[in-house]
Length: 304
Image 1 (cartoon, rainbow, N blue to C red):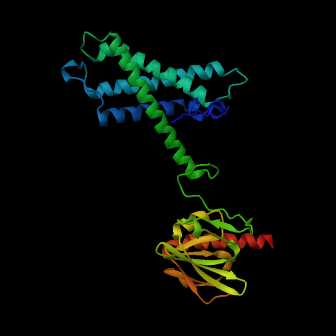
Image 2 (image 1 turned 120 degrees about the vertical axis):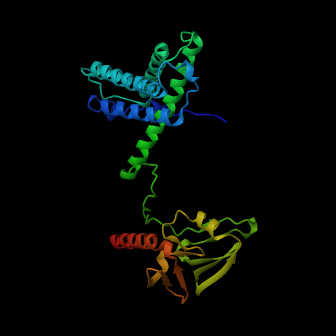
Image 3 (image 1 turned 135 degrees about the horizontal axis):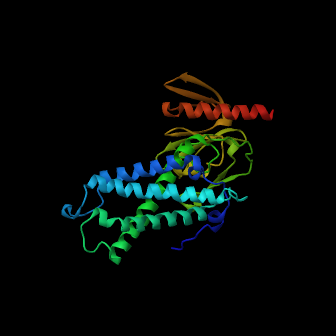
């Protein structure tokens, strides 16, 4: 499997993050301290014999949480000071962020190594093994914490910002009035059973096991045909048409053909032009149906 790096996104210039601005640094450092301390207290990742500890485990956790928080505070305070008189101080990119964070993780590992004599009884405190171990632990934990925080920020931002490409909440379906009259090819499980239809002529589709009953408006009136394809597979192939709506587990309708609806909060019955059949709207789909149907009607009114 080939791994590709989006270099354009990596080096794309962006505004300097608010979390590193001088006024927000103390808050950022406090959040980092709190998260690391909670992680160390709850999960106890250090497997150290209690007889080798100079201080209690709680104080060990405080030390290991305090070091990265202070380093981040001092590092970006100096960084902001040096950039203060730089005309390009707002320039930033993901690559710059990763480089600066790598420097912080490395510094944290070195400081954690230097304070081992204050925390542990061991003749090997100054060994290369413990140096590499502290640096490695800080790099791994730092990367995990960083991406956890970024994911958390992204999640809460996605709740507020509808312009994001990816969202955790379900986006509103935007109607697109540009629906063509070109025949739509539908692929079935058996190639010779493939068929085409003009979406505007479709009235509704009813599930029948691994088959569907398609009711369309033909030259001389409504026509119902049985096709070898499931309703879900059919729905996926016409997903680009905003007028097609799965109103019920067993029904899909063309909203352009809906003449009226009746019912209450327990469900609707849809009636259509040219036929006497009615199609139910399940209670779970009521809100989605009303929203989409209302949007499409507003769009058609605007076009008129």
